[in-house]
Structure formats: C-alpha cells, structure tokens
Amino acid sequence: MWIIIPAMLVVVLFVVLTLLQRRYQGFRIGSIEKDRSFFQERTLAFSMSETDALTGVILEEVWWKHISSLHQLRLALYLAQKAMPVWEKFTSLQVVSYRAVSAGPLTIIESDLLQRTVEEILLQVQLHFPESDCVKINQYYKRFIGPVLALKDGIWVCNYPVKKIFLSVYFILMSIVEQHNSNTNENFLSEAINVVLECMELSKLYTPEKITSFLEAYRCGL
Image 1 (tube, rainbow, N blue to C red):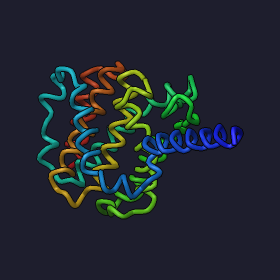
Image 2 (cartoon, rainbow, N blue to C red):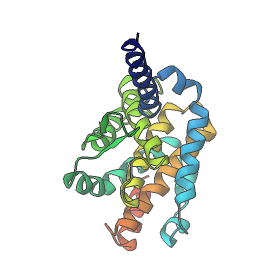
Image 3 (cartoon, one colour):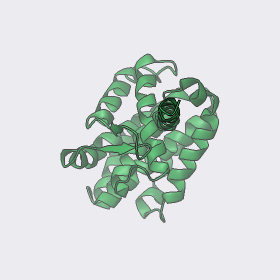
C-alpha cells in the first residue's frame, strides 16, 4: 500500500509536467485552433508593445501598406532574407533551446528553421499567394508556436534583433494561414515588414541609407 501511493504521485506529477510542456509546444492542435484568435492578438500585441520609437526609415517608408497582399508578402520575404545573417550568426554561436517547464525536456530550435521556412514560402509565392491549407507551410507554422509563446513568457530569452527576425518570419506565416481574414492578413504582413526593418536597424547590420535602398529597389521593381 505504501509503495503504491508514491508510485501514483510520480505518475500524477509526470502527467502534470507533460500537460504543461504541451502548452508551449503546440502538440494539442485542436486547442490551438480553438484559441487561435486569442493567440494572434497576444503575439501581435507582444511584438508591438516592444517596439521603441520607430526610426525615420520606418516612419517615412509606409508605401507598402498600399500595395497588394502578394507584393507585401514578397517584400517581407525579401527583407527577411536580407536580415537572415542576424539569425545565422546567433545560431552559429550556440544551440538555441529552452525548457517550457523547469523539469521538462529541452526543446531545440533548428538553426536553419527560418531559412527553410522562407525558402518554402518563396517556392509557393512564385505565381500566387500561397494557399492557407498548404501542408508544408502549416507544418512550419506549428514549429513556431512553442518558441513564440516561450518568447512571450520569458522562457526563451534572446537579444532584440534575434527576436525581431524570428517574429518577422512568424508573422509572414500567420499572414498565409489567416489570409481569409483580410484585416488580420494585412496587419500581420505590415507587422512582419516593420519588425524585420527594426531587426536590421537594431542589429546595425546595415546603415539606414542601405535599408532605404533595399526598400527603394523593391518599389522600383513593382
């Protein structure tokens, strides 16, 4: 009897830890779909609440808000590729990981996750805006859920430029999976562009003049 009780406590503790871990990993897809609207608002507000006073580059170059969603998506991808060295440098120096709960398993974020995600979307966007039910894009989207929640809750800590490039690619994904909600779609694309511009400026990867030249080069190609 006394042996059975401790064994039951161990089982209960294991179940509790497993459920907590799933909250951050997004394994319960049904719950994620049910609460997706809340999750969108939470992460978008999280990104915007961290934004310091925007620089002249971002304040002045707002023309992308008036182009089609497809062109906004292509611009966001173009800028994300320009900012990718921030993520590549960060992951070259360390294994990127976090624990959803202190006693839970270690979650490792693949070093090439952002690059592979952007490349997959670029393949889909050659002719048209990707479909919201694209299997591969949804698979990548689900890989971002845990890390984004970990960022929001302070479980995964990284510097601002790294956080910005990660969120930018995440918002690009959200603009695709939520494309049937036109208002949300436009918000996520606009935020993806703003966030990646902040990444480039905060990281000092490029001068403000160089960033402006990227924007002008894209606009001239429209």
